[in-house]
Image (cartoon, rainbow, N blue to C red):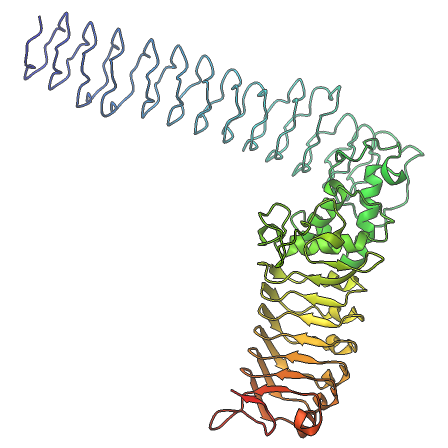
Length: 554
């Protein structure tokens, strides 16, 4: 029977029964039966032969090296290091590090780190990260990320679903046969590089780059870049031989659930194929944005156009008179981080005005006139573009100038940076520019002084600089002007005296110098004028501005 206390040294021959208390040092040969209590100190070296039965509980610390022969049953806790030989049965919990070789059967759950070598059979669930080497057979479910190395041999049977992201490189050989049935969903993006060998049939959409060898059949549409060699067969007469008017932009060829047009020939929505519709819409909005912006798939211009083509539930036609307006608002949303807005983003938590009334969210199927605080006239064209105090971050798009009937632009108390677009001078109906409390820089564009109907020019608390143009005297309908807390320099132009409707003019905390002209003082209320509030930096013992008629000096 076992001794009550452990031996000071190990036995050269194992006991027929285990000790009730573990030995201080491990035995050179394993016991015939496991110990009732695990050792507190792990063996310095693994056992040459494993125990016939597993221990009742794991050791408090793992062995410094793995066993040379696997256990007949899996451990309840993963080993720190992998076994040299796979277990007969898979572990119920994934290993912390990958095995040196594949297991005979897949694990019930994926490992947190990919294996060094591929499994002989696919996993039931996709791995969180790609394998460093390709698998010998495709997985039944696509991986969440592409493999870092392409497969050497193509799949004999196409995947049920496409990969979520493109492969890092093309396959070294083309597929043995084309798919007998098209994929349920096309790839989100085209391949990064062309295949080294041509496809047996042309692609539905043109490639971003030409193939190194021609296809056996011509494409239905030209590539953005010409092929280096001609096709084996002539182009059919049905294909237009004239050059394209502009380069192609790549959009998904699949329709949204509301679009029933997947054929390249059959007419669908708007009496045209989805491809024709997307290219025509790009042509329309390209007139105000240019075409180059659509070649960058991460640009807000591309995102706005793609939303209109593929996601907008309204499914506008290229000839719709409101297409440009909806595009400009969508562009504003994407360019100024609309998903991070405090109110009325497409997935935000709140969309209620200050009076507690519900408003429409942006980028929904509703008319854009009902998004947020936007206001339209009877013809449903925007007259008020009001998105104030809403965590709007980014630079103003020049395309705002396409909102030709806009009368109010109110974007105050946000984080808008960059310069004021000069194209804003094309908004000839504009009466209010309210951009205070942002991070705008640069000077006031000269084109702003052409807006003769302007009544409010509110630009305080920005980083604007330069001089105040003498052309401000053209804005004869101005009533309210705030230039304070900027970096304007120079003198106050005397032409401000032309603004006979002016009620408020604030200019403090700038770098302006000189004297306030008498022509401005003549507008003051004591002189039977309308100017009731005139504020400037005129309060210091040696003020940068002298003013005899200011109502408040700083």
